[in-house]
Image (cartoon, rainbow, N blue to C red; front, side, top):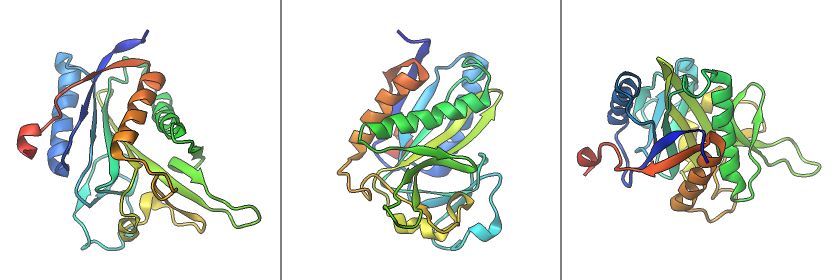
Length: 233
């Protein structure tokens, strides 16, 4: 039994243009609030690009010419999106779900951690560091923690958009064009499921995210046609 109405779940098979995705989310958020459109979780990949959140610092963009750079309008700093990274855009009615932003962000974190558990990966959160981390410190060695998933969120009239990104098998060298999420301390880096030595496909990750979403958000899921299918074809 679930506590909330079923959420639409869509997976785009081909990379989606970033600006087109933002425009779609804006439209869907308005429709959820104004006309009662169903909530939606949209899984996709983007072509290689960097995005700047509302707290982005110019000095954290190390290589502006490497990939396109977009103003995302979400919270947070600079982040990377590209092939091999599962982006999940989460358009949910936070007012209906308790009107508690901290609790909502905690659920996003728990969603990622629950999905990672499917692969016997222990995801952890850290005070002062947004996202989900993996402790890779070796016994007797220096501290090493790598970020495996990022969270960037925006609310409009209590409807969420943007969401999470989970590193399945991206080119990790692409992260070097920015200071990811402003994190530059020694011992901190970026990882992925495949970098951890796990032969995880995008389909495997999607299955884990779907099961974890049902559990953490107490919602049923209804598969639907991916947004912008006609545009991307």
